[in-house]
Length: 335
Ligand code: ACO
Image (cartoon, rainbow, N blue to C red; front, side, top):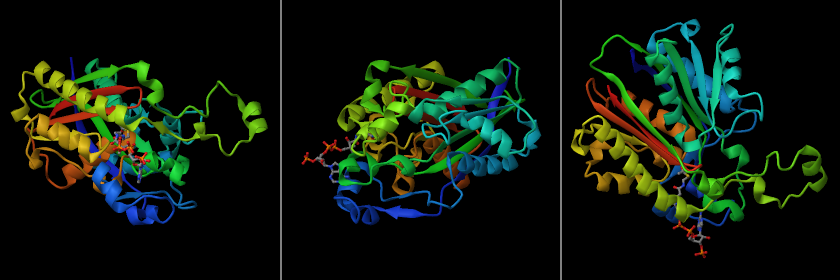
């Protein structure tokens, strides 16, 4: 059986910086409230007309990852695209990436697992490589949240947390068995599906009904989050799934060189850090600059950690996510 490893990383965020002060001018909130509850100081938002979308940001991140992996785009055997904010209801975003990259044809698959999307996508890539079916897989996580948030005070509990951006990784067949992706561990619990969800554009109400209702107060078109329930489940599931990965690989928390948690909320990351007795050097956070970018948050954080030389050859890297579904997962890597 083959082994896989990450051979290239890239990220892209829009230039437009939106600070907590900026938000407090358009809704009843404050820098103090947002910083204390979430850790977010600023986030990036697409500006109308700047050419950015979930797909085009993903393509920008992908081009950097492809170059760093030192492969030709035509060597990509499969595109996996994780997002909750696709450009189109259908087709999926992966096929649009294939077209933007001008790859004549290749398989492309979308992963709909929200905050856990990148972990699910890495795990899928790893399996295709382990079986020998593919050699190079492009994995993208990208989100355009700002286009679909409620910027009135009504939406403040959700809107202040989220930002736009994209991250990408090339996962390749690894000839060196001493490093690479060790394992991934995935879970879901659909009984909480509606506790963090966007129900509005659904097949329960087809287009003629939506057009007829034309209701500007229909908040089902905005994301809903039961924040406290999400928080309570997140801290438990993050801990469980990190431990599951460590035990599976006969590792201890002290073996972790770098934990890269999904950037959901700084308080969640700090809780996990304390739970595992990790130092500040063993956990990477950048939610302060980008907010929660859902499927993009892990690849953006992983790229920044790598660019800042915080990851060395041989390190044990733990990726972990929890989010809507609920879904959660971890990936353990020896770099
Ligand atoms: N600015 C000012 N006040 C606000 C804001 C805001 N942006 N949002 C909510 N409030 C108010 C509420 O209206 C409420 O006022 P009230 O007491 O007068 O009714 C008060 O602040 C407290 O609201 P809560 O929702 O109870 O605040 P809480 O302490 O739970 O913090 C938060 C909310 C930050 C969402 C928290 O529940 C949380 O971190 N949840 C975890 C969810 C999470 O991290 N989600 C990330 C996305 S999902 C994922 O990736 C896992």
